Amino acid sequence: MAQSDFLYPQNPRRRQEVNRLHQQLLDCLSDCFQVTNKLTGLLNAHLGCRLAFIEMRSDATIKRNCDIIIQAVTKIQKELQKVDEALKDKLEPTLYRKLQDIKERETEKIAIVQKVISVILGEATAAASAVAVKLVGSNVTTGIISKLASVLTHIGTSILGSIGVAVLSLGIDMVVQAILGAVERTQLQSAIQSYEKHLTEFKAASEKYHHAIAEVTDAVKRQLR
View: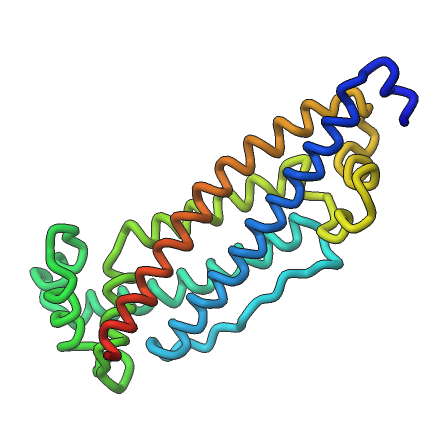
């Protein structure tokens, strides 16, 4: 037992809580890597992109892993912007506006994109049109991706950012030491609050991201049947 535990008997429980929250953060990060790679695969397969897949780095800090995802989704957004600009250029203004209209039926949007997708990509497939509609024609999806990047940036610049991903395997006290550094262990509660705040935002953004990409996958599957 640490000496400060005699003065602060709640510290052992708080160490356990920090350990649990750290694992939750790693699980969310891992999920984001998987979903980003799924999105990358969809864009490469159906929109002719050449995006690289990413891998979680166990030898790096949380900030470094956040940065890897941020860089990947930034490249994805640039590719989507290119497709969006091409659609805007090739479609009549009234048809382009229909793509942004949330009240317009998805089947109608796919039919609109289908008219010009071959000019943009060199070939026309219903699956490519579905991906374009779900990702390019949806401000909701692009907003979700931007929100995820913003949340990851906040995590990377917080007290959590400098923690090594692999520190969890070294034991609870090592996690605590990595988190607090020069900060007194009596401030464990502050570390817990930081974890809880960022996890709440991260989980919400991650779930929406996961759901949005799942919808794209489902839309592609429907077109391939």
